[in-house]
Length: 348
Image (tube, rainbow, N blue to C red; front, side):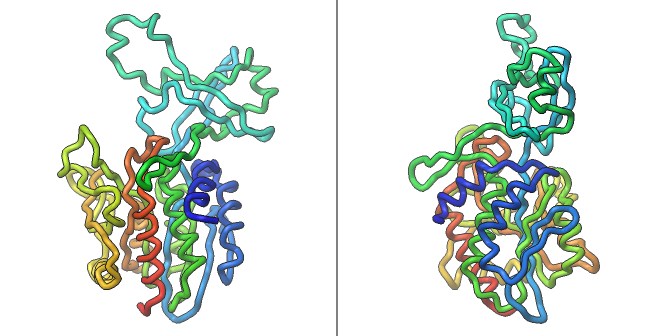
């Protein structure tokens, strides 16, 4: 399977936080013949091992995608929902969705009060998700239940993977299915000099939960998170706000965290980061350096495991992250695979 086909398959498979079993099965099928061992822990992390040695590397990519969950069904069969992960309200209205039930996925659309019935002041205001609902065509609460809808059903946005021009592709859940694709390819292609733990984590979008428990159980010598990062090389964003660009190679994180303080995030290990930089320069693989405000990754949980683990992040530049129509450049993905493969094939 080529990279584009792999990305399409991973992007279009659903798996919101706490409901990652389907995407986990898809990934397992891709890698089970290329690793020495594979298991699923009690939280749902898919943990693989390849190679041997006294020292170990953990590479983490999270399987979960942002999405929604059924919170309430009214007497007319309309669904109210809660968010799973960080989603801007304006991205939801009018979107088609899939409500995943035991009887199969049910299509629906997110609606709100029509603009024709809004007062002038209402039209100027952002419609928040509390004022939205999902219409699946049910005529009553009883009928919605007969369709299989119940409280707690996961909901995903209905988006297809598409190829754009100039090696650009667009799809949902690139955060972090592109990281999963990278890790899959590294596991397939590499001959590790150390023990390599390839971990596909769960529930990253709701608190780095999968990385927290898997890193504790594995306690590796080195940790690397593979994730997306914001590329805003487009209108309405100043370059200094988000200088990472598509097509210029993977981003090597220096630090991330909350805006104004960078607390709650990661300051990547200096020696580990420099080792990756030196390797990229030796192999003539383009890369970018990043200080990222406003978010963090599984690496934050990994570095704080037990007595502390030297950890860093390698990110794939992505436009419109958390938008359900994210855009990336395939060359950046390919260069990330080359860099990580080379890294695991050298001694720590």
